[in-house]
Amino acid sequence: MSPTRLLLGKLASHVKKLVRISAYFAFVAVVLALVAGRLAWAQAKKAALETGGELVKLTQAGNLSGVYRLRMNGEQVDVSSASSDQSVKSILDGFEKACQTHADGMAIDFANLRPAISANAALHTTGWPGAGVLRNGNDEGGVVACFAMGAAVGETEAYKRVAAFAESGDLGKIGQFRYVTARRIGGVTHVVALWTEGSLDVKKMFPETGDAPGSDPKDVPRPPNGRRLFTAFAEGAPYAVRVYEAGASPDAVLAQYDQLLPKLGWTANADVAKEASQNKLATRAFSRGGVDLLLSVSADKTGSTVSVVEMGSPNPVSP
Image 1: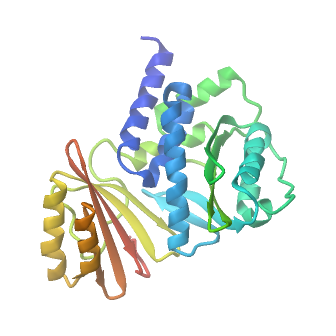
Image 2: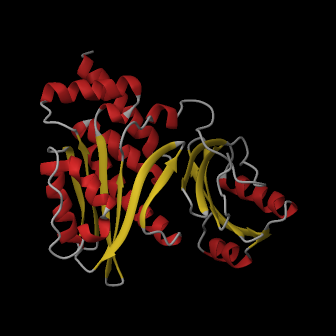
Image 3: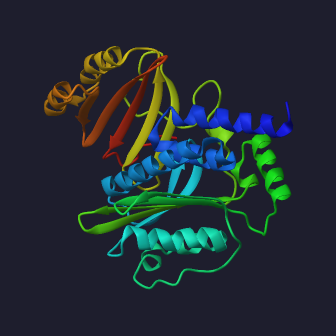
């Protein structure tokens, strides 16, 4: 088998493994699909759009604006959010052109997002054209993503960078990721930008076996035969998201939490349980001491995927 096919095979396996777990970190699948070229392009565009919706929800839930750091499985990405009266199309048109002509300078605009998405904004023109430019969506919402390469990069150099990433797992070997999503909600366009500077070790973030780097919420047991896949939180924000792989059915997972959490002082939200039952959703909500938990469970081939969202804690991620 040729080196090229071996390399694309490695990247494809990364994409498939990450996409199946959770939209909360589907952006990583977007990155890997961009690296793999058209091998997973349709999947990348879908994941990019889903990720945009999750990022908007995340920033709205925490009332976040300005620039902040998002920690995912121990690795850091920078995030900014702002709102604008401009249309989704006009905002994304500007950032798509930036990806095509000067992706490096997009970090400056992302860090100063509000003026960058205002009427007649003049975006920075520092840097070189980006690689793997992706655009998806419509007038109600969409995304733009690319890699900032830090130099004018030809095909041979680009391949060397992709090979270095495939060997090390560090996305920084390719370049710096640029991602922006815009959503029209209630007559206002909400914009969230995400970017990397430096290394982003995907292999470390998503080990083949054992727990991913991160933490478990206090006094919340893991699901049966649970393995932690994902921990995410915004520094300084009172919430966190964790995802587990469980070796049990959704019904068994919910039964465990229904039984154990009240014994640990958590109070179940009966309205959420009732609504979930009526709509055949595997969801529960609990509260304790000003902290709220939202549990969502979905079936997969090996058992279940369990999402635990913790809100209201002053320090939702323990060391």
